[in-house]
Length: 139
Image 1 (tube, rainbow, N blue to C red):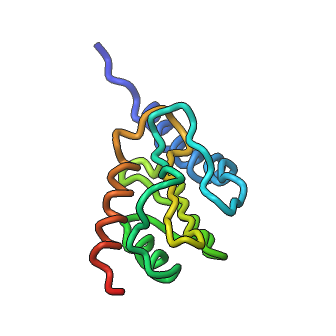
Image 2: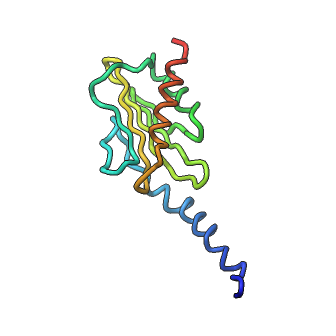
Image 3: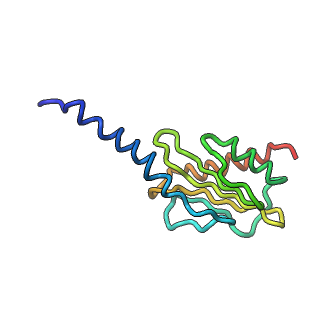
């Protein structure tokens, strides 16, 4: 049995690099002013329209909470709406995190993977971390 040439192993990192540099930015969703619906796949978590208000004092607290999450960067913060991109640790897959603070003080959220079918619970854990940060944040 012969071993494959090392040159055959170069196509995987090259393909990964091309996908990160070229394909992924094109998949960015259009700007929104409210968290959108979840697809019919298990890679999305979304709040219900009704429910108890989260302990978010203002938009600045939400912005600090989002930037405290690992590998998340804030893209949009305007009019009670926040949009952030969060990357996975190993492969760099992008998830969209959207937060909307309405006039009643309720926080609506959506955290969803852009690609794939399952996220192995990553988005649910992100929302749980966000909630824990907001519970501990000074008001």
